Image (cartoon, rainbow, N blue to C red; front, side, top):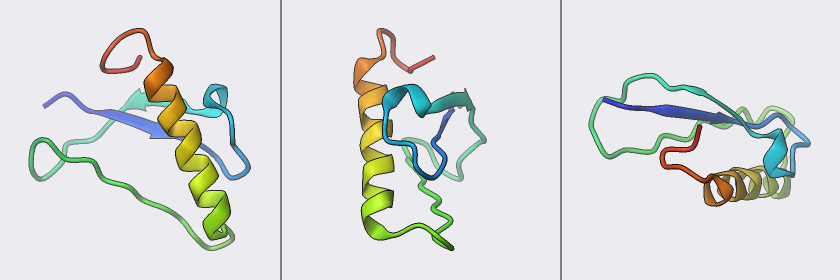
Length: 66
């Protein structure tokens, strides 16, 4: 199963701040898992970080993004 991990640290709001690395296997195929450590992250910050990930995926010239 091919997987990709997209990571953005707190405060990351730009696609260049999204790090792409090898992902880990999911229990089922065709799945997206999202883990948020919300200890110090507010809802608005989480949404902005997700927008950065979205832009990184959309701006990638290949699929899956590398």
